[in-house]
Length: 489
Image (cartoon, rainbow, N blue to C red):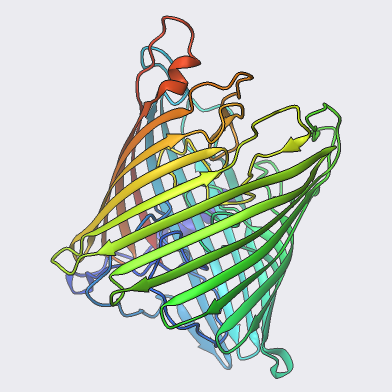
């Protein structure tokens, strides 16, 4: 039955558009991307999240400005029956990845190739009083050598929600059910689309709309992937939050939030404090984000700061994180853009003092913005990045990035985007320099129905890796190359 769904969707993919259709593809996203976009006045009418998923690419770094905004096209499969509008959405993508020495093994060991296929099919129904959406997602890992399959989750329910629009003429939207959630720059709450399994949440979400502001209030649980059964929510965790946006001026918006995450300790996943005793975890994350533009939108800037307080078993939680980026777009052919970014998240300086100082990025984006090889997330890290982008053709975007990485504290662990420990913290501290990364990516989008992405990255290990290797063992660079082809209705 699962194979039938996939075959049905693949046979239904649209043919490529003609040359007259060549135009930059709009990149719809439920929430603003990590990159700073030119600020605009807050739109007051109710926004129904589009049913059609964005063609999956590495999480966006900087999208170079286009000479003109693309005209939004009507979906291919959209029908009206009385007051209802029905829209069929779909996407399929195939990706091949090659990885070398991701475990920093001597003599360039650890070479692997992966072949992934992801398919989504959804149906959106819109009425004057609201909307309803249902979507299935099928993720296949076609790699023979992979056992267990790393990104395998056959056809399952990815989204199923209903939304009421301004019930009783109140300025409120109410959305209930399984849904994607992206807040702000997605550094803390997101549904990243890079992996075969796209994160979703079982939530109740209310949005209150003002003339120049809006406030989101939500509560629920994250959904976890289960390749052998229906994807359940994570029963041991509860997520809730408030997220407000104020359009302070025409070009500047201010966002404030307060997020809560409660996790119960279980026999399968015990939560231990620094004294070794188990207990529950309560993590509260207040934060502030500023986004704006100047010089006729040529200059973009973004700043975000977040704190974490709470308790972990018998420990206190006290941590912090910061993000800053500035970008400038040149008014010349190919619209070149230069972006500088800085990121920092605290680590634990003393594993025995009864205070957890490690900032944890909750459910933040898992691919980018900290380099394409995914060796870091917003946790015990310091990063400086330079991103260059250009738009050499109406259908081509090109990116080149350089990143410098270090641990915020050498006493704490180095953790990658998946929460895996690459290097344990050292009692006596030591070198904090983790390495350097160089990334390059080109995206070709001949129509909004078809996209090809190719990219490569190299990570050069720093003194931290050398100091933690076995004596006399040299470690070479880690390499990553990928090719992805996507089609969308």
